[in-house]
Image (cartoon, rainbow, N blue to C red; front, side):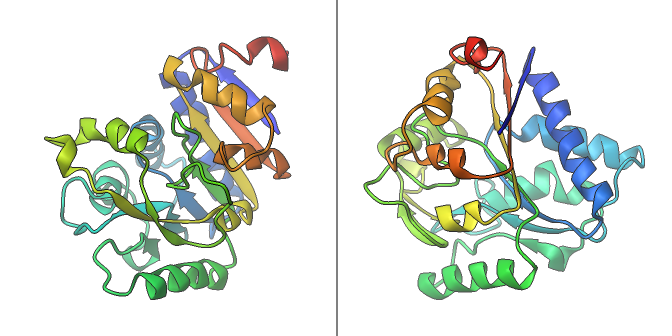
Amino acid sequence: MRIIITDNYQEMSKKAATLVASQVNIKPGSVLGLATGGTPVGMYKELVKMYQDDEVDFSEVTTFNLDEYYPIDQTNDQSYAYYMQEHLFQHINVAKDSMHIPNGKTKDVDQECYGYDQAIYNAGGIDLQVLGIGTNGHIGFNEPDITFESGTHKVTLDQETIEANARFFDRIDDVPKEAISMGMKTIMQSKKILLLANGESKAQIIDKMLFGEISPNVPASILQLHPHVIIVVDKEAAQYIEHKVK
């Protein structure tokens, strides 16, 4: 596991974008696993700039997003499908039929989940999976639980997650209570993983993830078992680990 500590959010975003762009430049047909939320916005902004400056070409790339609220329409401005269009897809040259996001309006959740994992398998697996992390240790929407989920599945969101996401909605009651998310097995089968975290609110969970016991109570702790993980955090998020990794 490689841990990179940056001075601030902007530097974290630039470093993450450079790592993603390097993956694409080395393998133009890369399969990228993408994350949403507040943390990767800066990284997407940097990737768009790199594309506009002809430093990276996404024309052969295939993408799979980690998750989507359920139920929600992709035209809803709080859906992750909308988020990805706003922050990345409409600004780069990734092919429309190469973008994959769980269908938040599906009438057959089990089939949607099975089909999503099958599509990842058919694409050759994920070369680089980008992750954020929740203050409760969730990655994707894999909430703390007594067991690790395997494949893509429907989840009930923890109250802590609902409250954290309420800032994106007019009212907390508008936040969906469920989501469709890649499972831990799907994430762990990625060839490489890039996890980003910034801010003081993530400091304790980053410490638990890296140096605590491996437990479903801290879902991200399972990344300790992955052979190729890069963690990029700013100084605020690294305040409890900085002395441990030097």
